[in-house]
Length: 360
Image (cartoon, rainbow, N blue to C red; front, top):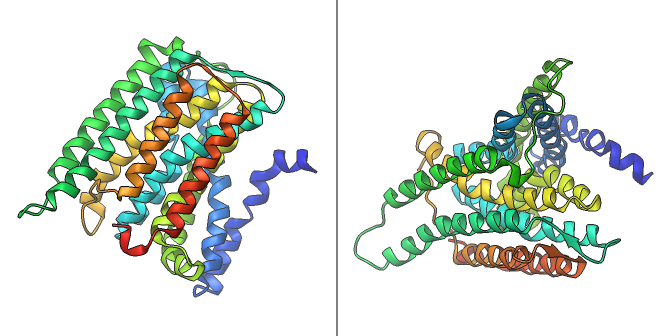
């Protein structure tokens, strides 16, 4: 039974798509039910995006395939963020960014260490690659926290802080992301285990393209319903928008990627597992966050800044510090995984009980 569910879980959860559509058509006032159905539906759709992207990347090979993988790696989070910005839910979008970072680093890598360490006393990975990824994540976190500190300090002055700093830092983050792509996909590809296409010949790419387009359209549709029902559902469930963004939206947007990382850890492929955990967090900070800042000037009622709550800044700082300490020696074990998950649970409890008045 477990083996069947592991192989067919995307098909099972895909039932959330028609369920959400029917609820929206027949009972649009049932916001909580729509919210729960779309939450389940986005997870398998995001998995299909990842599967199609992997297939196309294998065919393209080399730098082009890696670029495609990097671009669509966080497609679900980006789509949800764009649709939330259109409705003016900028605080929710920013919360989902911080939630994705701390979730990938603490929850995902923690589960990887636990699952991989069940049958192995020590799990080893490439210390150099992991250290470089952790350093890149640290620089990313600095780029996100400096605007928050700036806004907090500038509020004490007579002038209202402007968004100029946020936009300029977003440019720096995006340029750094482009440089990181050149580093990981071209100049130091061997360090990250990048290989040429494994299936460059034979077969058609159209099935993968069709899957990618269909799954992306499905995520956009379900995300539209999710964002529309989110505020009412959060109020009904007794959750703040900050908690929903940091935990719920961040987890469902990354769930497929999380599952892949844990499976790789179970097969003792820890380089790939830590690459997903840390690499996805870095991409959120260097690519998704600045891109959403730029898009907010076009699609949002008000431009999005990078002003995060004090608790979000502390959470990101602790997550980055923790993964940096673990990555420096090139090995881990299940107890470190337990500690990472425990830190994540503590932060989640903090976000849940954080008073609404303190969220911004």
